[in-house]
Image (cartoon, rainbow over all chains, first blue to last red; front, top):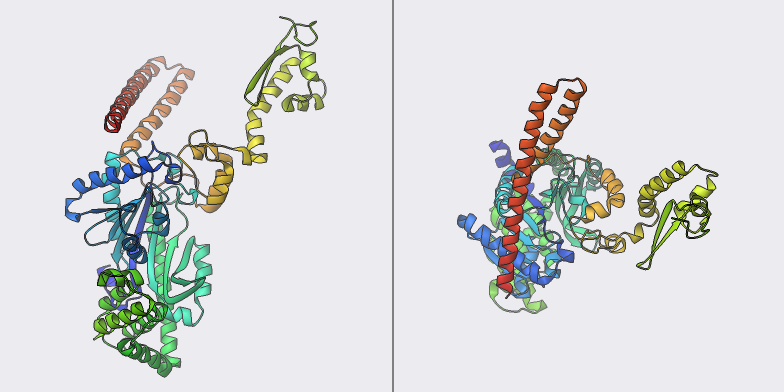
Length: 337
Length: 197
């Protein structure tokens, strides 16, 4: 098993795995019907309990009504919180650990939306962490739970386990061959959704996708995770198959695309966000196909660092549209050198 | 008591109507009750022709029981959660429920939806430890009760008595733990009050 995850990480098709748990407290209405006074207390109460239970994680509480909007946006663009949470700004908060691989949103769709992230294809690890934290919360608060319906969530689509398992994948070959449409259909039949991570309207760019389970009732958490893993392994196989075809049929075009993208990233003076994501995806494909030697981790970090809010936060000041493009190019240059 | 309408026969039906929160009560005899056509469940009886009183009563009872369903399927729009006040319209717009009681209030709407979306209708995953124990105890109580019934039917009274004692013990335990929970909650509420002031 270790060799498998290690291999996958090396091949780099899987960027990360996530497990999300939705929970509600039994004695309060769900966030959409909750007044802000009780809502704010919710965040504080949960934080106070977890802070003592999980001392090692060095948790921090961010109260949306107290923090700068830009800080919130930065976490939003890194997928640690959601737009929904930002919308409930009068009563929502979130808790992050030191490594920022655990995020607990309070009063998003549900009272508690716990998210645990691990690198590569490692759903078990993320699940284990999530359950550990879930147990700690449960020990101190009474969850809304029904014998038949399981954990009661604000959206009836999540009842039962209240769990969403997510795997983030880099699938350039399946995208280029448009095979992704067929994959999407077969996934849907098996009870999973596939969505683009970067969207321009409805169009996916950057070749990065996340696969999520649709079914949450009638299966155990382990079943869902195992089924998802099986689907992901199949998709990896398909992606590799199409990469082989690409390499054998249009090797020069592919190499040109990779090196050209690298060239632009290295020497551009102004870089647009969407363009940069696409170029990084091309370079990443180059690394995965062993066409070039760059540290994949630092490249993956770039995905997170180049959005507007992160750049502004990194430099500690407001930037206008042109400045952002300039600073983005500078940062990319520095990381790739 | 005489029927308040014809004032001839003995009143057997107490008809209570609530319109715009105003309660009207009237005692009627069988015949007059049948004649009232503006009451939906009574008019349906009229259509079924002559019915003996006993049949009529069951008809009323069953139609009152099923009336909730009729209401829910035909007028789902009118469902409102008694706990949080969520209306069906709100739910339709957002796809979100307002509290855990909504699952009971909107059961007619949710049940088919859940059936079509999910792999099953019964939760098989993780159970919270605290609540889990309560559920297990309740299940055991149910099993014991049916076991006792079985033993009584087969006239094994001595064994039935043993089971009865077990049931008593379990019931007492559940009762006590409920009381304990309640006192904890009351204490919490008191604390809240202090903080507020």
